[in-house]
Image (cartoon, rainbow, N blue to C red):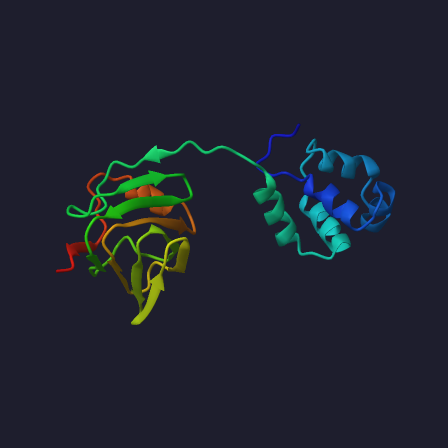
Length: 201
């Protein structure tokens, strides 16, 4: 099997879904039956021209086909516990999964968490807040969003935002960077989030 981070068996799935034989797909694309078969079995990685020919035959963009092949391939990522505090007064568990970071936290009493500026951490990436129990009110650019248990809120992390958590609230926040630079920055033990947390009394 070819060494690749992609799983092009999706080609066979698409071919079968469209009722095409290997021979028919070969005729459509100009690729040999052997080449297509090797790609479907992950014995060969398609060239750019082959990928474009296949995507045109299936009526999808080459980018989408490439993306699907990447997401289809199962792989295990070893997690690392990042050695930093979420904030000096708002501890939580941070886990680094290479291209995703997440923080899990519990609040025993009603707490307000506000972002201080300048916020060096919050250059553009995607952020998802998920509530396991309790309730969170998130204010993003002046608009309030109430997040109940088993709900999540998705937003760009560089937008101005703050949180208010009810007592007995358990949350997890996912940070999905557009590149891995954010993970490298956060592995610095001296780096802190620019958040201020305090009980809402």
